[in-house]
Image (cartoon, rainbow, N blue to C red; front, side):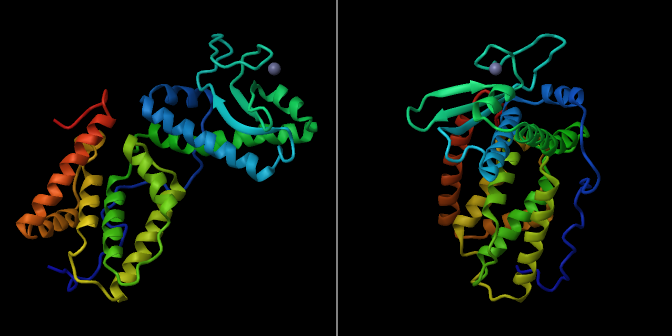
Length: 295
Ligand SMILES: [Zn+2]
C-alpha cells in the first residue's frame, strides 16, 4: 500500500498557479466594489480579520495603557460613501464615520463609540500618535487588500494545496516524533476554507513550508503502524466534505489513495467512522442553514 518505492514528487508539482509575488493593493473604489460582491460569511471573515489586526495593533502600541479606557473593538463601515451620503456608523458626537472605535471603561464597563478624531481626543494623544493610528488603519486595509485583490482576479481557496496539507498532517500523525505544526495557521486557513476565500500569500507559503518539513521528516522518521489512527482519517474526510465548496471539488490522487486504504479497513470500523461522519455532516448542514447544502 505504501508508495515508498516511487520518488517523492516536488511539493508544488500539479498545484494551480497562485500569485506569490507582486503588490496587491486596491483603490478605495475598487475595494468597495469587490467587497459588495462578497457573500455575507466572506464579509464577516474580512471584518473579523480587520478587527483582529486592529486589536493587535493597539495591544502592541499600548496607546491605552494605564488609561481609564480599554480598546474594545473596531467597527468598519465598508460601504461608507461620502458622495452618496450612505452612512451606517456614527461617532458619539453624531458625525458619520467609516471607522468606529469602541472603548470600554475599566471601572464602570460603560462603552463609548467614537470616530478617529474624537477617539484620539479622548485619549489625549499627540497629533503625531493620532496620525500613527490613522496609518495603522491604512495598513490594516492594505493587508486585507491582498485577499480582495485575489478574489477579484478569480482566485479561490487553494483546494489543491489544502489537500496536500491535510495529507501531510495525516502523515505527521503517523510519525513517532511528529513535526510541530503551526495550529494558529491551520485554524486561520480553515476559516478561509469554510467560506471559500483565497488565502494570504504569507499563509500559502507557510503551508508549503510545513508540508516540506513534514515530508522531509516522513522520509527519514520512524513510522507508527500504518492506518491505525481512525480519528485522523475521520477528520480528513470531514474536512473534504464541507458543504460550501463541494461543487468545485476535485480530488488529488493522494486523497483517492487514502480513501482506497480507508475502504480496506474492517467493515465494522468503516461503519463506525461513517456513522460519526454523517452526524458531523448533519451538524454542518444545520450550521450552514440558508446557504447551499449537499443534496
Ligand atoms: Zn465625534
